[in-house]
Length: 108
Image (cartoon, rainbow, N blue to C red; front, side, top):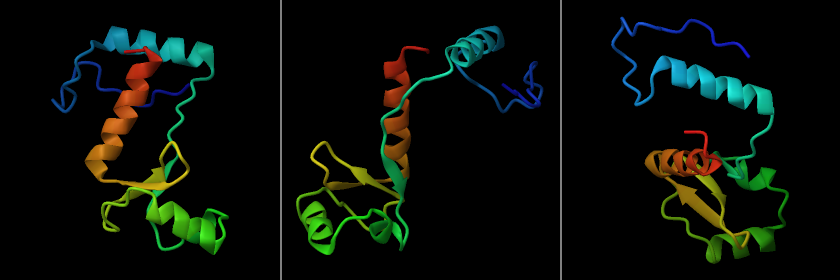
């Protein structure tokens, strides 16, 4: 595991996390020693090619759109709900989903 350049003393003032550096290093060691944590978040960037890349037929795509939760095609991300239908996520919702999955891992 490579940490790269880390501002240990926070001289830049950019890092204002709720954990101290030692705690973060211990958590990173724990993650690295475990080797595998699964986050089951099947979300992709919503691009022009997304629907072609799903491998779904036209009828399956129409079904997933109709019964899904597409709030806006301007949302940055798209994924699947529990029923295999499409669901869009704004940047904020996407970050909240990631945070929820990371919290469920129980590492922090």
